[in-house]
Image (cartoon, rainbow, N blue to C red):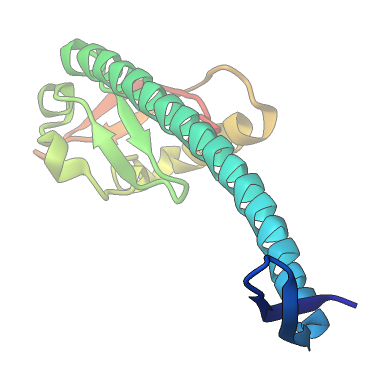
Length: 178
């Protein structure tokens, strides 16, 4: 039991205690409640410190990840700039195709070779540019490139220029996978 006392006493003229008046309170429940609150506060403080450390560690990890992402973006931008430089100044027609075959990018030489401005070629299917008698060779070459994983598959065929004339071209097809 926990008790709290409160009292007063009377002292005589000669210095002796004459009387004592007091009250004794049982404060066990209050003490136990205060002790429980103190223990909960300690436990909570430990949890807060632990979670704060976890969050600091996570924040540090995220900062590293963001820095790595920025570095990767810089490398990708640099790589794209090099690709663009090679593509833009090549006399060969360089084209990038999507999974369904549509042209996503064509180099400026497309205008000299086929008569199409690069922007006109975006979204075009290469099959409409290939002579009907040569389409099977192109499709076979595309399949070979995708299935075999060969570095390049070369296909010769006639390609339609914007002015309606066909010209012979050799295509070097390579599947780019991520």
